[in-house]
Length: 207
Image 1: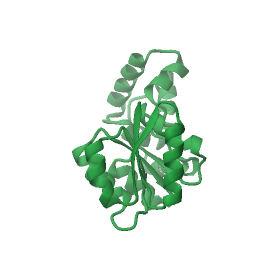
Image 2 (image 1 turned 45 degrees about the vertical axis):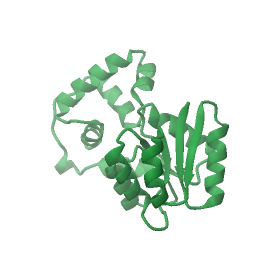
Image 3 (image 1 turned 30 degrees about the horizontal axis):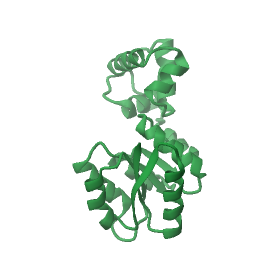
Image 4 (image 1 turned 90 degrees about the horizontal axis):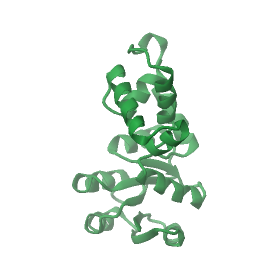
């Protein structure tokens, strides 16, 4: 059973989310909170698998709340749930450790799918948010980084990695094992002289 908690200050939205999560096979809403102050202790005590976290909370914001919880419970995944799609909010949340970023106007099915995706190692984002993130990674020609040439398969894999797909789905698409995907990614990181997915995508899209 996947355990979910919800932090949302608007009661009507919070209740809809609770009902939708509980209606999903294999999911259970452990608790819901109307503010970050109540959520802090509850999340660290209950330790859900994932949290739907509103950014625009009344006092302490959702990003600050997430950072405090992750200090003690780094394994909890956070799906930021917000009306904000400006660059500052997006990048502040992602730099703070958000695992996904979805807009409140998305249908409930997308929210549930995003929860499953972050728990499978993905990084779901609403389409407009993904476009902003990818655009931010593009650098002028004069600033293009240099790195060892990737093979065709490695470039194909990196394209899929940049789209936010988890390793399992990448393996399925390429017809290889998840272990082989990880081996390719290790080789890609070595060639590009980077340490993680964000750095690799950043350099790749800036070519």
